[in-house]
Image (cartoon, rainbow over all chains, first blue to last red; front, top):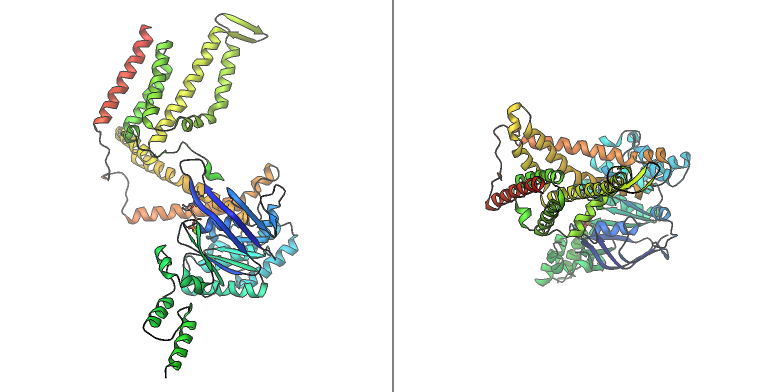
Length: 285
Length: 267
Ligand SMILES: Nc1ncnc2c1ncn2[C@@H]1O[C@H](COP(=O)(O)OP(=O)(O)O)[C@@H](O)[C@H]1O
Ligand SMILES: [Mg+2]
């Protein structure tokens, strides 16, 4: 299993031109094995840039990244191996689906890893099954699928490479609430079944709050918070300032606590809040 | 990756040159190029040089940035210089070996040609750096609208050009994203011989074409639903209008051109 350490990372786009744009400033992070992390921030805060650093698609201007204790910027570091270890699913599945059938598309990654046809197909089969892709669509062209199904194929395409860390850039963008819950539930299940580290990128707190154990909040290329969701939500004033909102229930619980009800204001999900309120009501003599 | 490529792109600063009407800049560039092939003698050379540098100074674009644009024509420039130097046989001969000569005329020709080519590239890039692609097509459309009378679809051509120009950066960005997405799946675009490499591009080209067609479709639909029917009877939100500076610029261009001709005849 893989661990990732970012040490004082800076990143600038089009460095040295008029279009220069510093996207990340002094990022320090430590990501352990098997974690479930959400990277949150509003559009343009640097989330996509950050995740592309993890698998070496972008190279930081300053600082170092260590994956399993090895500096990935060493001259003799094997980038291809890194990309197998740290799988990245981009925001738009349309950017990666190209083959004549879904199954063939998922085989692309394993084949690039140098696996034989048989083994690649086995991996593809397993990955498509893992993401709950209906078998009757395996040999259909990917261009006719619905948004949610396309996303499943895209995730399977990376999953088939058996990464130890799975990063997903805005996996719920453009999906309806049901599709969103399905994808998030799927990721949560895969993480516990396959034991991989999962990193979710999202611009919506509410979406990922239920699922992740740790939240990294980015603002303007800097890390603002790095803590469990309930702790992050307790700062909802500063979250509002940077254009993010804590889940509705967090506000509700705060109001209740203020009006004298004996509830702890840390609830993140509706279930937790309901439980809190019920036990508070029971406590009232 | 690909995004760092510059295609004579607009350089956003605020200057007198930037604010000129695109028609002025188009005709000035045209006249300047003509002048480059007309001028003669040191006086003419001094004039075209002075004008070029004065305009660059006015445009507030860093000189180094413009010179960078010359890189693309360096090979062409070198070939021209070498041919002119070695294969001109008229004039006073300084040296010769087999078919090669080094003569006074050859040296003069080489210098002249490289000045012409270099100034031509710099002159046109000053125009493209100070004019947005949209303004440029607007200017072209207006300048060429007389061709409408002989049934050249000027508006349609201009519209096609501005759509194409608008889509170039989008498609470049998209290519970059697609390449990244496939690289993340272990694709390698640098390894292997030419056939292998061409084959490796398939996973990039298919999504790129799919998305280009979808975009074209969407755009056509969006234009149609806003009742776009082509150029006839269509008015502009920002019609091109000449201002005081534009008239002055025209005057300056005319004076410049007369001077070039006078220098050519008199000196
Ligand atoms: N390829 C690029 N070239 C130049 N600037 C970019 C590029 N990609 C992103 N940026 C800029 O970097 C900043 C961070 O972008 P990004 O990481 O995509 O943010 P997010 O994913 O949080 O929306 C933005 O201001 C964006 O405009
Ligand atoms: Mg993004």
